[in-house]
Length: 350
Image 1: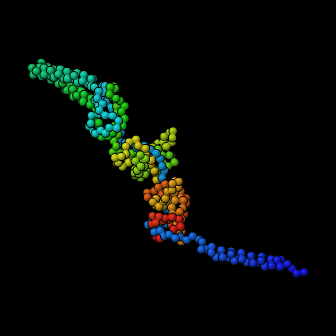
Image 2: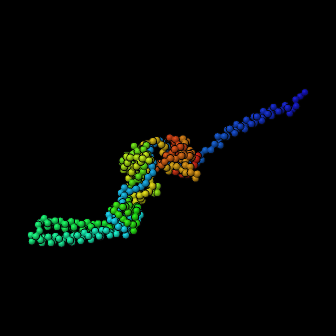
Image 3: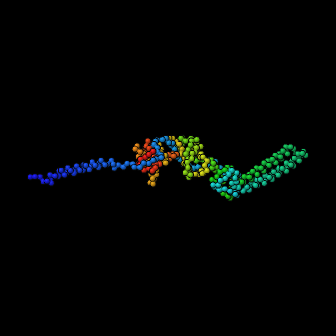
């Protein structure tokens, strides 16, 4: 019996299909390399740098308050009611300017009494001089009367000086920062009425932990940031008070500031004390890019000169550089300011 024609041709058909499929796979595999995307755009970059570890200072950050090194409390030398208050908080005053006047009732009475005593002593001295010439009194008696006249003169001068204290003058040029009394209040010797501060001698008072106070010395340079001005200044440690607060166990440190018009007593400040050095990855701040999501990144150039956007985590800013905490490694090369604008996959021309 002869085999069926259909059955006899099936093995050959299967072999044909297998051969055809193998040929198709070979063709696909031979075309695969041509489908890999190659950089089609070249960007000329203006800046590039190799990321390297650098030594950066370690800073101990504290908060403090701007105060004046020259703070003056104004009080009266007389007892009396304040009749004329010419200043208020925030006013600029000059040395010798009248701040207020005190009603000098008692001082006036003292002057009147002293002048009466002087007139009486003068009359006695004239009379005793006449008696001395006539030999009616001794020289010793005449000298005592003359001495009483001189004492009366001194008392008159003292009373006039006391009366001049009715007008209270500013001993320094500065700013009125506090007013403890107002017009109509009773002033007494030694009781503060106003407080002045000299803005030309400013410093920052801050408290330092006992862990770091041994690393801070007078004359050290300090980075000071005034938050309200969004500016950085360089101060100098002027004094480290060698006695801790018994409650917080922190030490008071006073840092002098440069003379700047915009800095005023009472402003909030942050101070950065240099307490050592450490190694960090620094890149130029202008090389970083910020996305709308708040993320930061840079363009990294690989060995073939192709750019890749890399997300990074940034740390503190140091001068014109910024620290990279994560996302970059030592010896990697970054690029920025490309024309046309850099994108991932571009060929870089330095």
